[in-house]
Image 1 (cartoon, one colour):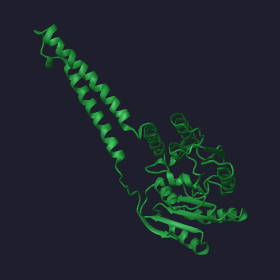
Image 2 (cartoon, helix red, strand yellow; image 1 turned 90 degrees about the vertical axis):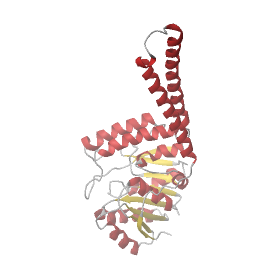
Image 3 (cartoon, helix red, strand yellow; image 1 turned 60 degrees about the horizontal axis):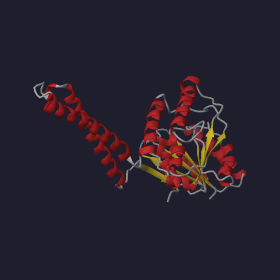
Image 4 (cartoon, helix red, strand yellow; image 1 turned 60 degrees about the vertical axis):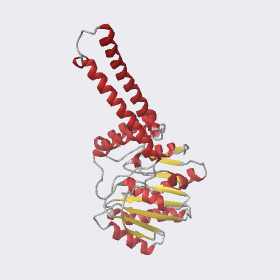
Length: 316
């Protein structure tokens, strides 16, 4: 199969039929073999009924329906697990991503050898205050923090080689940083393509300002994971040992001072340096233990259940 199109959605019943027809037209005009994977992330409208009706006339449609809303990252993870195309395209269901971009994205992965190609909505049709400016700030911070130099990390329109989506683990709200996750996994050939962005036609956005707060928190998380995710002892252990020896140095000085320099002076427990030394050694020990536990957790193999599927369509 040439292309798998993974489309996470939440309450987008009005746009699904139009989006389906548009994608099918692009696939047929380019003679692509394809599948459409609709991931219903707990919609409360008739989105799943619409997907079911579309599947009756198009056997290339597959669907996964979550029991409740688990988030875009979990929806993408479920779609990546089931995608079988040589190239996996992700796009939003709100008609703001243009399916006409798919052939060029496919070509960049297959012919030019990119592991991942990210869309860049250079000209946006969103609110300047609520989306454009926060998005620019967010992308600037992401570029500065990560090794990936993209202009638009959060663009939903992306293309991946099948190998990439099978080797990355999208969790929490890390869908914004899939290029960073891919780079950390060894897929460093990442490209970018300017894509057309369209104004929302139906409904309203599901994301508020809190997504930027969450995005920056996730940026801190992924920055830490990128540097120390495989070696937490290097960070926590180093800080712990440093703080412990600072505290030990204070305590040693107080002991020498009391025994040999000023034996008739104040009790050690009456001096503030004693409590500084005690607190520093305790904190240092805790940091060291945190690093040790991190190493143990890293080496354990625990399967985490990320979502609960209610229904599927044409999924083995």
